[in-house]
Image 1: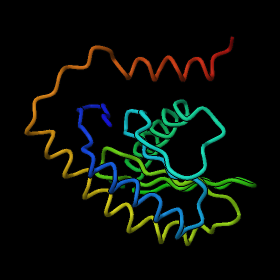
Image 2: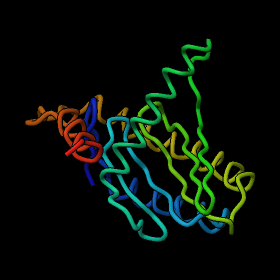
Image 3: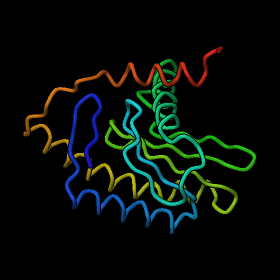
Length: 167
């Protein structure tokens, strides 16, 4: 598995296995329906649990934009960051948390799970995910990477324009 963002990194087999185990553990312990990992530029890294019934690529872009907007709001009120966000709907809710300042953990859950349990179980999982990603970033910093051929940021902007355009 390979992900790219501001910098690229490569998942080794044991990274993918550790991440998958952590996400499955989180889902079992929290009763959340789905867990996603998204990088800060909006690329979907992986999902676990129930398959989302929406365009996960568009969702990843919007989740990253949501987290970025909240970083700006935090700054405006004198905070360095909001390390987690919560959005509650009538039937569905989501919890988002920062992982290593470059990845976003997203938990989607319904009334079978409580925010308290999701937050409690996410705390340990986010800590372990941060360790895994920091190890991967460290490996990436010592390994040369090919230059990206296209601008993913432009693709994200185009996708958001298509989703919310007036046409």
